[in-house]
Length: 53
Image (cartoon, rainbow, N blue to C red):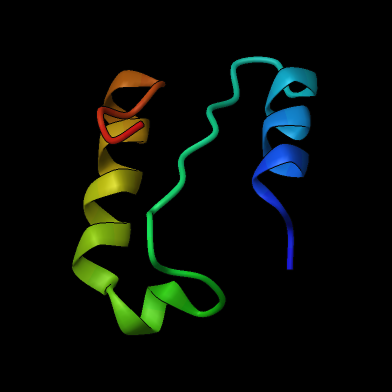
């Protein structure tokens, strides 16, 4: 599993990227909390940043 530190390091390396952490969720969250994942992805697609940081 990727750590928060590793995710933030990747975020700094990816141009126009955005690190978004859905607290309390891990592997397969697109199956366990699909509405939250979809809303976060739509925020990112619409704004380039997302509002759920």
